[in-house]
Length: 308
Image 1 (tube, one colour):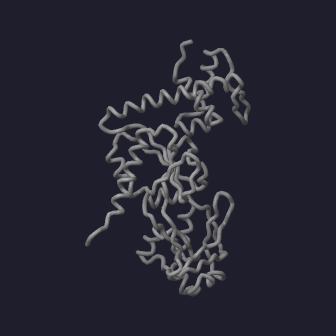
Image 2 (cartoon, rainbow, N blue to C red):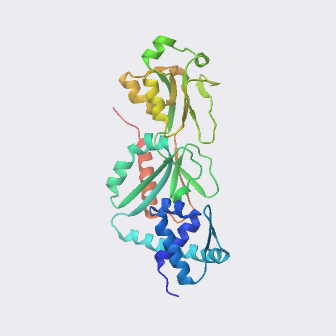
Image 3 (cartoon, rainbow, N blue to C red):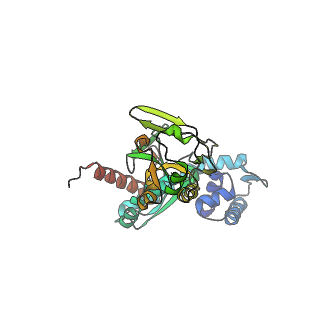
């Protein structure tokens, strides 16, 4: 039975995403176009593939049977098209990365411009979010995380600086009015600007000095979601609202300019840098392989000793 392959792609994307809106968001299409494509596919096949309600889109038994056979075939089609990259001077295609907001701000700016200059036929799409759960959410090819705990068949390679720190700081006006803490416990009566993860957890501030680690439960007038709303906390700290404890590099411009004054520097917590995660069992698309090789090259450059 002749069938437009674009209609089959629409069926697969809706099935994978579990709905038209989500599939539209992942593919960059729109829900009405995908809905029309699925309807036309069902008409040509003469059978319903999805049960639709106002809230859910679920595969029928016939739809499940089709997807079980169709998905591997579509993967082979994508692999065949991707193999053509070997005959190009530079690889092309779309590369989607799922990253925390902090990585989009502190890690990727040092890599992305040169990567895109070297590979002009690659379209890089960055999904930056606070609730970093599934690396492959939204159809992403790989992701960046700050933890090297690996799931089965996952590979992680270092990306960006290998050691990072949290920095505590406040505006000079705030510190002149409320005093300068000399020990993390001195933070307890202060006005602190805190972050809350998407999970609802609002962790204490952790410090370390000469082998001693300390977690302080602080309080204050402002709580922001970790990720997208952190810039608000930084601006509030600059304006004298309270003390902030955040990635050192995030605060570095304000500290360098004198808008923020660092405090408790001997106690700043160091932690390992982020990792690029991908699934080694999946076919690695050419754009992702190019990015992996580029990151490894950057790691080698960072590892070389520098001479004055």
